[in-house]
Amino acid sequence: MKPKKSGAKSGRDVRFTADSVAKIAGLANIPVSPGEETDLADGFNATIAVVDQLFALDTSGTEPTHQVTDLENVMREDEVDSDRTFSQEDALKNAVRTYNGYFVVDRIIP
Image 1 (cartoon, rainbow, N blue to C red):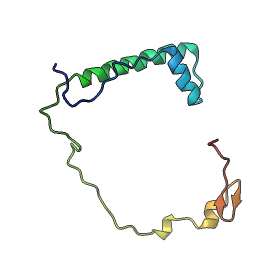
Image 2: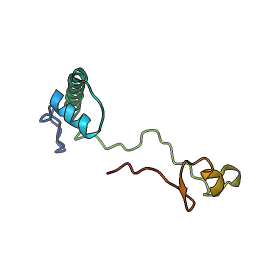
Image 3: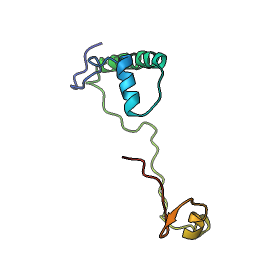
Image 4: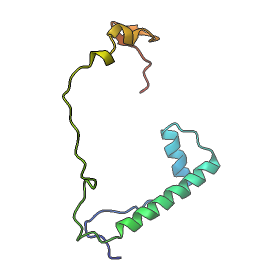
């Protein structure tokens, strides 16, 4: 296999450890046990190794492919189907909290 000539970078410099998995899990607020940290780090490193193999392929003579099925978007007129819509009152009737016709939810981003 010849090196890819597109200038794309591979993950060769990336190496996951149990500590890096713990840090990512903490940032994402995902509980991960120490055993899982090791397993996930091994899995991430295996994935990076596969990606490195892909980066090693010579694709310089290959045309980029963006669509392989020859399917086209099916468009329809943007019309309101009154039989499938709720009134504002119907939409809000089971809401725990509302204010001036809107749903009220707890803030989730600090």
